[in-house]
Image (tube, rainbow, N blue to C red):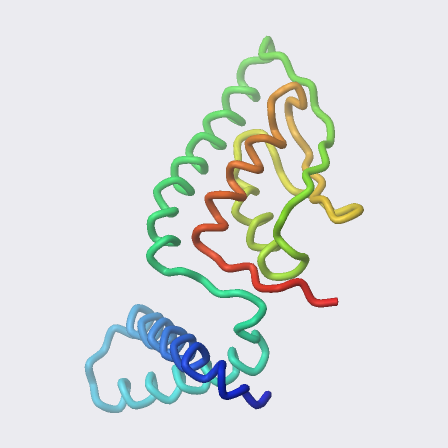
Length: 171
């Protein structure tokens, strides 16, 4: 395990407590039991998961802001509903004009977890799906490239940036 610098200890402790609480909550959701043995196993699993996450997912690589993330969920659900309606409408109405193609969307998120999270988040945006990366930009397949797809993606990036801290670019 990497040794934390003394100036990072309060931040590292806060992150470890947050992750540990999240893993404990996940355990309680998956195993809703108040039996002492189950709670003891859950505490051990949460501690192990926290230690492993600190080892393999360095806090400097980014973090999740739980309050902002929860506030983002209604938007995510709404976008998922719109995506389903949009695709169904296009399937059942052949008169709806289509102009399929690819667009490149340069992002401020660094490569790695933050950019992958963004691609996952935007995969439910109506009429678009991320399908690759080239020259630091995500490539999206779109049902209609005449729409302001890149501008919509940038608006989504701003929303997601409130919920996650992308960390610093490593190089």
